[in-house]
Length: 136
Image (cartoon, rainbow, N blue to C red; front, side, top):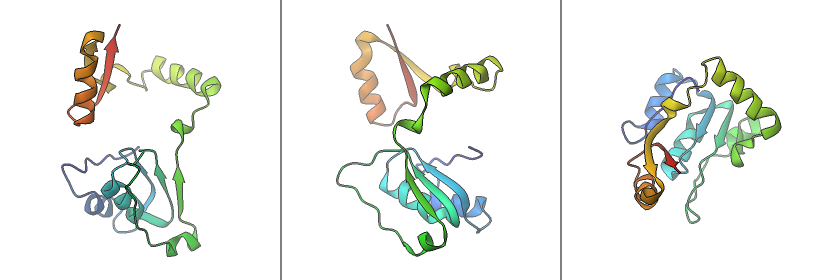
């Protein structure tokens, strides 16, 4: 990713429009599952770009789109489990980590002991923490 936008802090559609200079993004990726964010990601994608939905929405949440751009090459893609290939990707991640290009330690925002797991789950659900680690 070249840019990230926190929809809690700024309007995602306005931020994406500014970043793309009004042309639309080549690729947008939603990792939240939020209706507002998914809608904004699609709306910010160029007519020949891709919108990738990696976040899983609530069962009763739907988005409404203008399907006309799909006739010109815009694509929407749902991501299943990150589309990983463990036999190839794990070795690649390890290489990137060893080269210092994949910063794993910096991605962990909170650590919990196993007896704090219920607190960890509650804080994740409330959006109070990023990536957390349960230490066994």
